[in-house]
Length: 240
Image 1 (cartoon, rainbow, N blue to C red):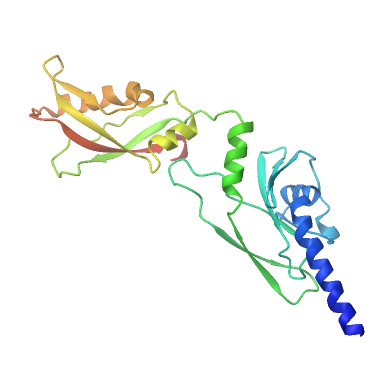
Image 2: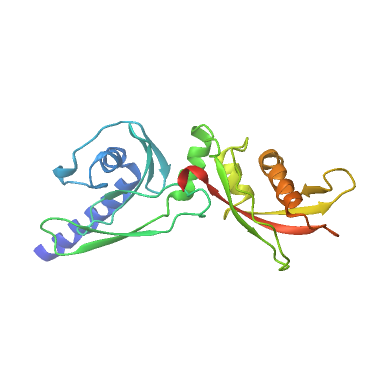
């Protein structure tokens, strides 16, 4: 009879832990503000709390405003003993040209528990991206540097122009134009001086890129007889 009562108690605790993952604002704040990015319900070593600016994004996901930045915290009943555990995602935002951040496996151990919990971070990032798009001001695009160019057709090119410029566009719009940091342009012969034109260049990038491309081809001194596509690659100059 005693064993049966214990079994029922465990089931109740498990249900509470799962439900509390959706209402864990205080725990999420501790995870965002603590040194190790982890907070487990019932463990006082995680009592650090530096903010009450916590937005619930649904499914145990939280955006936490800290003095440094807005943190993404993922909560679930995933502690070794079944209690709610919140972890801060160390890579919540995509890199400039590297696509979506990789999923991160995290192992969490609690003192006095024989098991180690493995948590894969990343499920909350789409919700976080949608929330930040609604609540944060657009971030201007950084200064860009042309890192190289190449022809899919294999035809010779002059050296890529050593160009740096800051496009009049925000960071997310830039990532949409060139997700991997590559952009296709076209160089064509024209009758008007200097005899070369650049097309297929999005307006926010044209002002900084097109004049440098034309100058590179004029200096090259080889006549163009037809339009040629070129893949230009960029890096964030401030990141190199």
